Length: 189
Image (cartoon, rainbow, N blue to C red):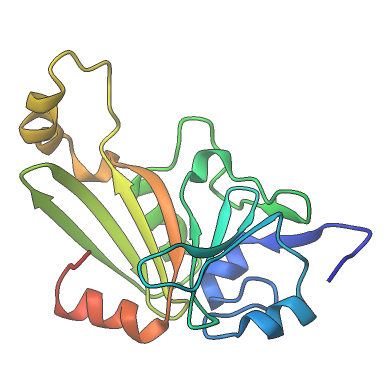
């Protein structure tokens, strides 16, 4: 659908309710095309293992069998809704990025149900917050200083950083039951 103005997306409401304007996980491509603005670009490839997503600036809508399964915002520090979306980025507009601690403070202040997971593996150290009602998954990673020995930093140094200081790197909306399963049964990627 073409409009002569941008649709405003309130990130607070997205993370509170799981609704991206009127779009929710589980809607069909056809429904979205009839009820939401057109994407900036479409990667509609239906073969196995191939990309099947739409792009709105730096926001991506992922589909499986014509059904929306994920809305992904991979670089929260520079959120952009492209030609048709205006993003009200709520607390995520600070230049130095949001930490686990600062986001939890806002979530608690606004009485949003959440769970926290810490994941440490040989080459990965991250913290995630699941907003259970919205089906949102917020991922935080250690902030990388100037690294001389990247392998050492990934295997050792990054694990020494206080998880409360990890910086928000991405937000995804997925089906609510999937978030509840991940946060109640363990961390899986």
